[in-house]
Image 1 (cartoon, rainbow, N blue to C red):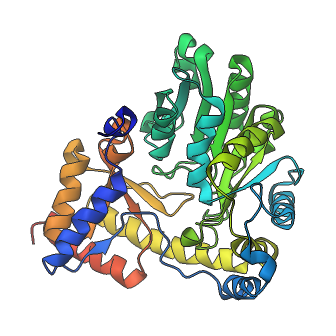
Image 2 (cartoon, rainbow, N blue to C red):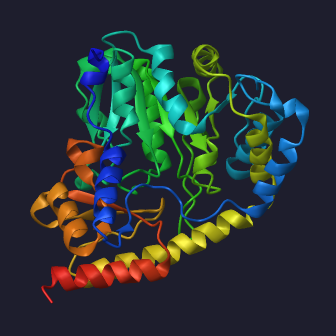
Length: 386
């Protein structure tokens, strides 16, 4: 009965993880999960208070606009001016999204016809691959490998694929590898996209989570970037608002307009109550973001040191709240099963992010320090055979 587009989809990775965790919990296992990238830290109080005040306004009880409140879009524009020196027109170069995932999926319906090619980073966020399939397109992987610092090798893309590609997905700081990109890479992407008439979709959901004084650049900082692409971002990871479902897309006005045309047909926009809370997040002091970074950096240091003490060659990530770990024997699913069954510890197998993720697992830094230490103790006992 199902449509081919559904039957041909791979199982959604995080669905499978949740199911296996629940099975173990029913067996009475105390699970420590580093699986799904969902912040355990609460949404800052001033954002919650702004939401409560906004909920009292009758005008916020009606259908919101498709593009989002102009006041929220102005707040996004101001944030980009303050953080990156990027000028954005709130009227034409910003659209509000139900988190990033909605727009990441729906942009394919605006620009992909059946048979069109979408270039995507592999390993990567699963929607980069499934979005094109829903729209009838063909997803073509750009491998992210350690030897290339987990950046796609643009020169290795066959010229026929490049000429026929309509969209390209990039994502830095990267999920799942925690790799970062520099301005030189972004300049190469702009040149490649210009030459091949490709729309660049830069997912920058982790752009605000960086350590040791490092500041990730935005794709839109590069000259010519706005001519060829857009940036996807959200408040989910920056302000611990994953459940609030608010994000935005910024950049090229024609691309934004195409996304708007899809959006008017599939939903009614983001709640104005949530948008007013979002304004408070963007325009208030950013000390809450700095505190998040402090917490994640402490957790990162403890987890990386613990993994190294077990003999793993573990890179220290400069950004995101992920640790990307190369595993023994190169079998990510078996390693993940072993940790769950023998340690009660959950991580995410790299193969779930694409075939080029095999040989790695991802740990999300979404557990407090005491639970990270406990997980390290459990793994150490099992892996050292104590």
